[in-house]
Image (tube, rainbow, N blue to C red; front, side):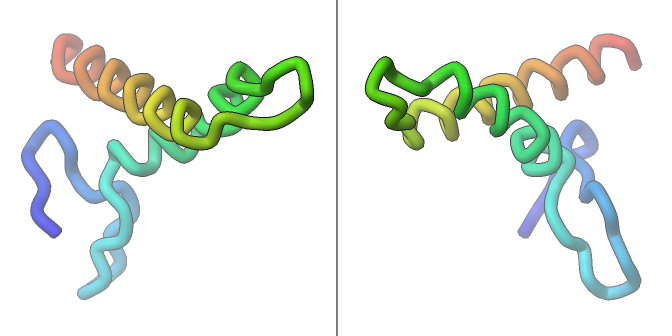
Length: 68
């Protein structure tokens, strides 16, 4: 897996790089995105939730880059 300075590894441990910061942000956003995707029948739109989580993660990385 490759990363850029804007998307470093979140929790590197020796030779194990783990997930990227983008993946970590998306994982944190996923529960809220799942809740927002629930229809009236209580079913979730998992694809929409996953896309939404990565949209949030991308926005968080962009805000992080702007802050410098």
